[in-house]
Amino acid sequence: MLPFTYAVRNLFRSKTRLLQTIGGSAVVVLLVMASVAINHGMKRVLSASGSDRNIILVGAGSEESIQRSEVAERTAGIAESGIIGISESLGVRAVSSEIHYMNFLNLPDGRRSQGVLRGVTPQALRVHPEVRLIEGAFPGAGEVMTGRLAWRKLGWKESDLKLGATLTLDNQSLKISGTFAAPGTVLESEIWANLGDLRVLAKRETLSCVVIRLDDPADFAEADLFAKQRLDLELSALRESDYYDRLSAFFKPLRAMTWITAGLIAAGALFGGINTLYAAFASRVREMATLQAIGFGRGALLVSLIQESTLACLTGALLSSVFAVTLLDGRTLPFSIGAFTLEITPVVAITGILTGLLLGLLGALPPAFRCLKPPLPTALRMS
Image (cartoon, rainbow, N blue to C red; front, side):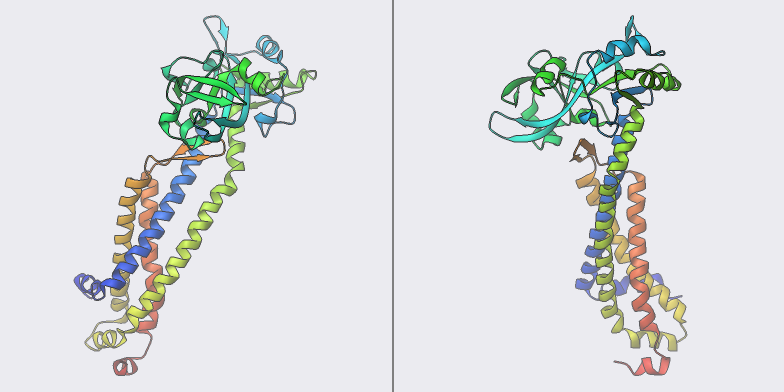
């Protein structure tokens, strides 16, 4: 075998070509790491948002979208008394009447953006225990409470949603009374308003849903039976976790597009890298033949050429890993129903390293085979 230092020295024969290889592999690896982080982040936030202990009662036929659902106001009271196994604390059952609404919000300076609003009562905190008030107070009449990441979903600055600021919805001013956190869920991208206020602003006489928290997830059968028996209410019962699983499936094509985009760019970079290596290895046919003449086999030469390519690509992968941790880790990205945070986990990092390794191997093999293909007498006469 040729010494490893031989491959290292050959890397610096053409610094321009070396920088092109490192730069191309760094871009591809960074894109692949970003794609993996985006897919994992979106899937993680949707999975964490639903609890198998929570049951959502929606209008029959509206299982795919709570915003389109219509549920009678009296449903909450009937369900509270008719469903067995509802979680209870201090004599109060965990049943929350909610309105889910999406509309444009305005800032005093005229900026406008579409936000996700949820009309609630204090009962919502019983069915969504992950919600924690971190500043201010629960919203009363004419007030709203913003999620910790709502500013990112709206595309505004964090200071725009500070305590005491004013938002306008359908010409109605709403004062921000507090900020809440619900780590790892889409809830903290929402804006919670007083149920009565949002009913008026949304111009609706019905609820979007009734959320019930059970002591035991196995009691879902009771809630499902209740929904099927009360034909007058026209209800459908579904687990909150199942609802967010459906949303995750809905966004699957979007996640697939990130993979397709990454794949296309990776393919372009791979072919560009192969072209660069063809030019690099083509000028070394006589050198390879000389090494064969003094006793080195073609297998040893192939390994050395692969080492050169892999070293350059792994260097690019290392640079892209540094960029990913610096630029992507902890960054919050919005999507239609919320926002999610990118995390450069060990899985993402390992994927990046493996991508760099594959680029080095696949990019080197075709030009290396071509470089070593000519018979020894012919190769020695080549210039």
